[in-house]
Image (cartoon, one colour):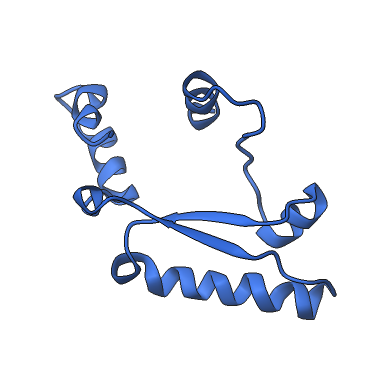
Length: 110
């Protein structure tokens, strides 16, 4: 819900939405009529192994289980100055006592 609210409040567009998906993302994408995946990564060095595994699943899954053509993926690499930020770091800050998470997170948001 937080992500939905952030997008709604910060973007001036009506063609972006947030969905929580269980199961294969390519099945959801096909059902919704998506023609392309956009995935944000820090760098290939940091996120490459996991992204390559997902790429294999999202490519071969539709061909074998579909049967349908895979949805192509475009990777958006983050700015180098933010490479140290990970979901683990964000969870750690949010779960810390003391300093308010909002203040701690402010320095991590571009």
